[in-house]
Image (cartoon, rainbow, N blue to C red; front, side, top):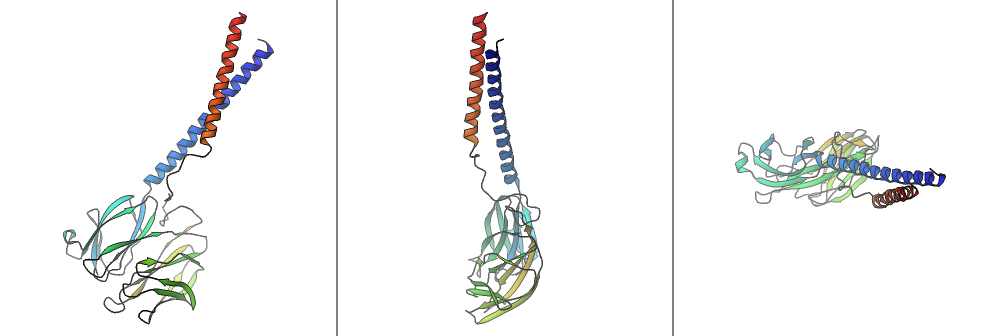
Length: 291
């Protein structure tokens, strides 16, 4: 074999090899992307519940026909419960009434890897509903996050201060504040209701790598009386795209789109393979003619 033919054969094999490597790399990338999407789709969701309806009082909570909470009192906050993503039928019934006499029936849809605070609200039997808040407990290591929820129907727009410093200026009913990053330590929170010319105080010790939630519940002009409820949950220091539970492993980000370089690499790989095959065919024709 002449040097020219040897060079052509070598070039053809190199082009073919590089093209096949490109195709294999694309296949591996798409496989990893598909596995990541599948992991997100199968990640659980995390839900905690607070009864904030003055009408409901102590109740039983049912999810998808099964009792989740028994004799659950007004103003209490659950820990996060792990639930499969997707729609779930939530029913709340007064203690002893049973699921057939539920005062509230609503479908709650949750995304994989996401965390939620779900509040039962409403002051009359005909206006009960679930107010859903999406939680984000990711924080910087060594710090604490703070969020306030206004669930008192007659409190109006409230403000939250700590040691004379304004933390939240104006949260209306059925809303929550943005998250604030604060230093760990002891705090006295004052919630002021200008509508009622009243203030509610409470104290809490905020620890590092925790998320502190402050709930305003009850009524200023009825029963149960207005009160502040606090709850802390573990944060996730420096871990992006995760839910509120320490075991959360996935994000609520949308399904990954095709990699931006996939088409150029794919086309280039096919061109390399085509060029390699073409050179080998040319070499084969030349070899047959010389015989």
